Length: 439
Ligand code: ATP
Image (cartoon, rainbow, N blue to C red; front, side, top):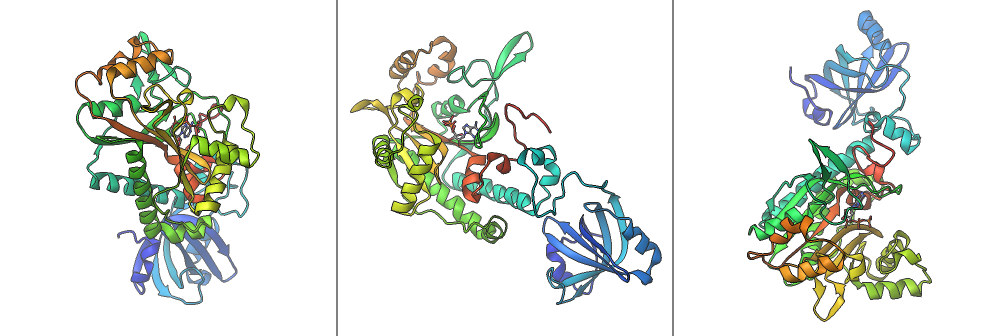
């Protein structure tokens, strides 16, 4: 017999069905026994009249919450049942895996234990309907990203994550043993997506792991995360990259709202707003003026940069002034940007680069890249980089390379913004941080 998903039971009224899922709740009463079964599509009440079958009644009484069950029964329309107005009259039951009791983490509980404890028992934590919804939404997000890219002529690449030489600076690199020598885990696909521009691919994207040996203990950093990267050729400036990104994001929000808007409202209390384009743009100079106006003092070590508190304030400012959750901060000083960002012709102290903030959280860095070999080499040297370790990269720009630019976005950060989550640990399947390598 084929499995019927709980979400499809209404089409099976009067029929015998096989339903499989977790035992959400058991109400073992004197005469009646009620099981609430849960699968990824919903929950259903399953009823059994005790005297009808003593053996089955005993089998039910021995069940523990969260056991994995297969049940067989007949679907009946029953408007007084709160769960979907229908019920299954139980005929037989198969226990696929009896859960041990008590549960270390009860996915049906109203109050949640600490986030760290939840990480220890992540597979039980993920059984919560909210967690499930998050990953259903994330699936829709990635699908919408790909749809938009493919409609716009992008090619998908997968670049290697084991590298022979650091891509930017050595600071955030994990070193690994590689046979007799050593290698590094990629901290970004940056160089390789630019290689695709030199290869004449015109437009590429990659969704893949990124590793950062950054001892950060914040609510928005991980040592391994999923990077969403794209790069496009024949642009005039970073503005072309921003206008692509804002339309791409708008499309993602639109698609997600269509398919998951109600679930997001129900499980996250968020009314998803499809952002208006163009997103507001603030130069770094304007951003500084706004922060100054609000008497916000940036920490001295953040000179030329913006710290998370400043980002939040700018997010609020833009929300109030323009009604948009998103804002591009543009034209960052060269001191806080990597050597490969192109500089403004008329103001060589500034890069043609941007960050995108979503509800005051940085989710993207992007730029037009320097595609002219001599200038790139000079900029690398100015930053104290030696040409030799990055010569393979520099070579991309020796035999014809179109002007190009792109961005990198953290998937979990986007999920935080979209679903209004306070901590990145909530937004990722399994968190990796300086103190967390398990499960
Ligand atoms: P931050 O300033 O927040 O540390 P960054 O400037 O190092 O970020 P980039 O190197 O520009 O970030 O990476 C591009 C995007 O990748 C960021 O905008 C962010 O969305 C995401 N990202 C960067 N570092 C992390 C991290 N440690 N954990 C999760 N996501 C990250």
